[in-house]
Length: 165
Image (tube, rainbow, N blue to C red; front, side):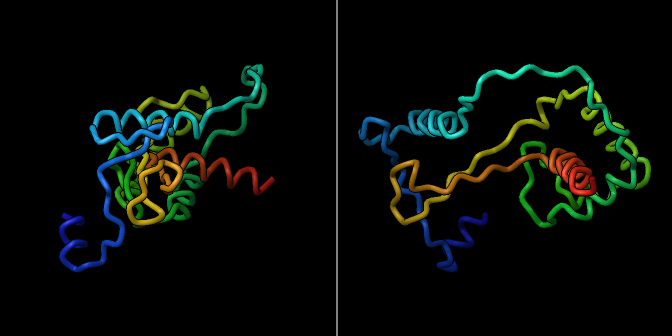
């Protein structure tokens, strides 16, 4: 729908070329191959070459996350942003009553205590936006990721705790 509106109003400035260059320079036009190339590019972009580190066992357990911290984090997370893979907007979370915020607080405490983020909350959607019209190389695209707002709230709480120390 948004694409149609943008095309009709003429506000869309970057159109996809429908092709992408492979690492060896060949032009790819097959949709499956293009997706494979993007996956390859994203893996390379976020590759972690650091040595394995020893994981410490609960030596740094902090205080439990309070409901007030969750409410503060919800207010501080940017509103009006696209949802992540879970399709839950920050506005929806903000509209939860006391019971719902309590459930979110409980979930965040489970994650905080165990260090285990549920698979659904650790997934991101990557979107490639061309920097210039007709871009055919991955490097000529700006890659953004859409992540769960629940994850953003947890990260905001941790960031606020670090800042307040």
